[in-house]
Image (tube, rainbow, N blue to C red; front, side, top):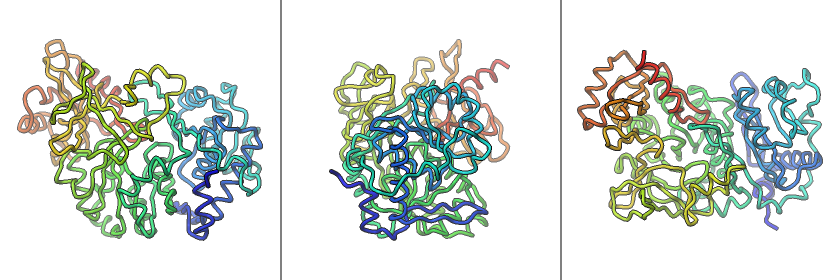
Length: 514
């Protein structure tokens, strides 16, 4: 029987703080590993008493908090399938996820009960709802306190190596798909990666949740941090100034972030940023969407120069490549070398392996951390599977030194006048313009070119479309230069920070027709 890592830490470093829940205008809550493990055991035993068994689908829905982390671990210890629900879900979105996932039990923050109540009659598989917070206005709900069992080691502990997460992909191109992944043997999957980035050697690892834990990146790295006994600082919901306060107050040494939060942090005034000490940051893991070079330089102006790491991966593939701090400026545009234990192949349109450098192909990865399948969509899993390797449709190339570069998603590639154009290249160029805050590039239907390149831009200050097109023309060939520029106040994104390009295509098409 394998000892659970929370139980191990409770026995070895029980008085070390496991989780800090620090929200503005609220008392700071802290819980040590001994007490946190007891709380997880109590919830585990509570849901087992409700009929949970290995393989039971158990959803959780709430902001980053002690309770959210407790639920994540309790589901894992029970051997269940953990199904995170984005906390901003509309009734329609939540109904789809809970129904498609066949959720049997739901653990939910009381804030979101009104949304659940509006759809509960349409969820026949949902038998039990556990809620934390004020549940007084709702009937048929089991309170957190009522749900807790005893703190004894659950009978399922040590037998739950087959425990799964079912994280729904961002749904940037259609309905989200539930990616099933084993989490029981996490140290076997991630031990070499943690050693490579130095987390196993940090005397005191303090990890801040930058972004919602329902997303695979923040939750994955929070779980990995707890594998080595780290303290998790929960930011209930993201705010850039409050994020700096948390780093300063708790001497945060590590985090994982999509580009959008860091863009907002680095855009704060110098006066605000100077109020906070961020020198404790040793490991910023950049991912979820590509960081442009302009954003990396902005980060490095404000944070320790040796703290920036970048990883490429996905919900399905986990971490595939790692770019170390010393390579961030030396290898502009690269996402790094293969992560420890990961094999990568580039495949051309005829299914042949690409060996030569600087030649784009579809990226396939193989490792013990690959997801198992898509729930109720095995055909889609098999469609993207090739001799033990898996793809999510990203196009990449590698240089002479073996460093990988992501061109773009295969589905986002633009074919204009017979020329293949990758939006990421154009986005990186326009992002260098001093008046551009954020940019996304899409292809729109065009009678002459087949597809025309269009850039959607969020500005820092007023700037004309003609000026931006001329700027692009200085750095890009004719087919890559945008034919049109559309301005927006904000780019539509998923909860994990990925730009919803299908919405942009529709928006641009309407703007051009108008």
